[in-house]
Amino acid sequence: MNSHELEMETSTPEKALHFAIEVGLLPKSVICPSCGKTITNHTSPNATTTTRRFECANGHPRNSIKVSQAETKCSKATVSEWYKKARTVCLLHSINNTVKIGGPGIVVEVDEMLMIKSKSFRGKEYTGYWMIGGVVKNQPDQFFFEMVDSRTQSSTRDVIMRHIEPGSIIHTDGWRETELAFPRLEDPPIRTDKNTRTTIDSDFHILKERFPDNQIWDVQRDGNCWIWAILVQLVKNGGSEFSPKSRDDYLACMLQIRGRTAETLIEHKGQFEDSLADLGGETEWDDFVERTRTSGKDGGQIELEALAMTLDLTITVENARNRQRIIIGNGEIDVHVGYLCWMHYVAILEN
View (tube, rainbow, N blue to C red):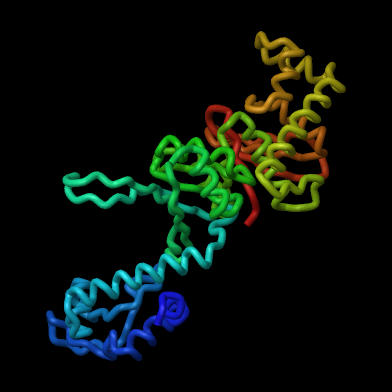
């Protein structure tokens, strides 16, 4: 039996278990070495894995290599060789069944590893290979990995684009090149978090507590959040003029919205220039219009008023800190956003 045939025979947990019993690799029952109880059922250790193993009802621990030797009556070398074949099968299955994982609002955990053959940093030095992999949180059967020459920003971005669905929430260990690769990957631009306990601030959790029946989508903190928070809702809810299909489409939509909003400011200069003056700042009118048109510039209430007028929106803004609610515009399309500290907006969506 070659590796391809072995892969087909073990393509599902049930088929793999049947194959192992049929060829004599696993017995139908074993004796627990700790309590002497006969174990006849192959169980999964928890609900989030497809692993099958003999599990003692009394919860006694089991060493996999030693248990495999006892169950199969084979030597350690033979068991190790079968483990190696199993790893090869897993590798072939991953290569031959590559599909994108994740999706809007789904957490994908990504990490990298340097693969190198060395023991205790002694002896001959070998050239290492970087492996980038990802797995859907709490779904270990949804994963990917790919070998790369280096873990640069460009190579990381290419791997993520090939293996992760648009709109996924990506958790990493915070390595710089990985973080730099992500902001240009996401369509829609759902924010990536290197650690939810440290990067999602208290304001975000306040909104989640206030709106437990809603989805709170954090978006990229790149100065365009006031547009992203609205655009993702228009796309998700459908019926709008925007239907981006890729990262570049989302960027084009964002720039288009900025440009049209700037034109609305110019068209209604008398109204908005007075509002700008009431703020008491030193920003000149022409600079304000150009700032609205430029990517990466934060937006406040005046920009949202112009945006609501441009796209015929009614924008409900929830302030996380003081719990105030502001209604901006009186358009046909309703959108719901949250306002956090540091002029950051998030999308509040219906489940």
